[in-house]
Length: 230
Image (tube, rainbow, N blue to C red; front, top):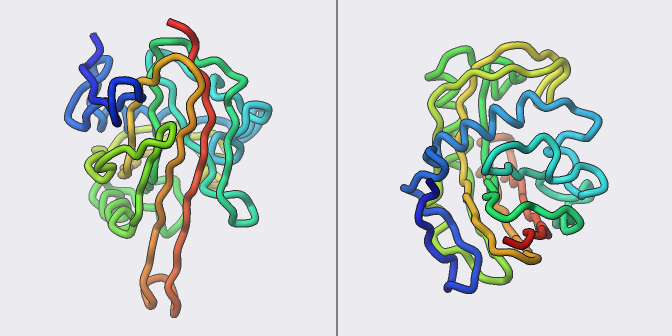
């Protein structure tokens, strides 16, 4: 059973599953947990990890996807620091599939390298919440229409278990681990046809927090997708 959904703008626009709703039997927090448990075990090559490459000819959006929800994540920017474009329009996402979009997020685990490493649930939560508290300016536009109140789509997972290969996306040594994640996420049910999703946000640290000068880690991504006919 699918949840009822709220329009991002009007009935002709893509729709966002409400933050307090369930979709396919799971809450947003449960889908966030599922996202991390999907992403962290992925190999780094053949195809490249989604945190590394984002175009259809590099890593198709269909890779490693199962079920009613397809997960989407991407690098933050181009290597030269300019906004990133991810063209997945050549891949048709089957009608009825929802897209779990990672706007800006962070995790800490027992396998991460410092400063993201902790062996306890409390320590992992503290690290995730510290970094999350520095996220500013989150946004999402779908086909040119801004999604209202993106900050309401903020979710913190309980501690969960995962297994990572060696090496894995966040470290040189994998194995069985535990983690806590936090971030902004949108669960989208897009109508058939082409769509443009522009999203992002920054980690901002004041002078003295990570060094003598202010530090910003920016994210600005434009994603092109195609939804198949119903």
